[in-house]
Length: 251
Image (cartoon, rainbow, N blue to C red; front, side, top):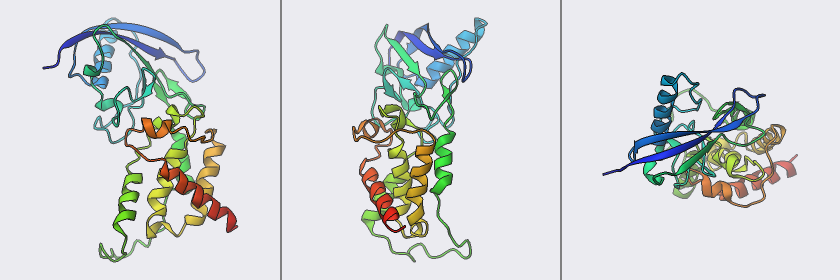
């Protein structure tokens, strides 16, 4: 049975994109170890509202580790100290009684703070719009096995497609690079026959958009891979580099 613990929540507060931010600490008592991290923030917000204070703004949606909205930097780690989970899957049992938990938004020039713990991640959408799609004939539906795909390629494509676009890779990278995200989105298409139509332009267009939006360069520290909640491999970055080189040489 999970024990109740007392914690101090040190949260980044910022009223708007141009406002000066600051940390504020709030004590919480008798929080069950089985409480999820976002439920803890809900409890804290109820407390703040009852005290006539401004609640903490943070993003969340599915709370099932699928959507990637719950992007928080917790005690120096994107999504918290546990591995291969999102913030909404983190529970208070991972913290000690009396511990101070520091919560920040993603830190990246490409992800400006909207308010408190919310950041603007439209940059990822713009990268996808630049080339993360395929052209298909929307006529009759072909048989499921009409286009043969090897098991190895299918598995690699599915692994890459598990990227939820949360931005943890950018938050973990000392350069604020989005290479792991971009490479996953390129790989999930480059490995399949359906992705061959735009293959020559996809890598070039998405990398160009990434650079334009202010993301940093990759220096292979592997911090992105270590902190990714879905375990996306940096082997995808190598694939992206090959796709990019082929596209440049074919110009």
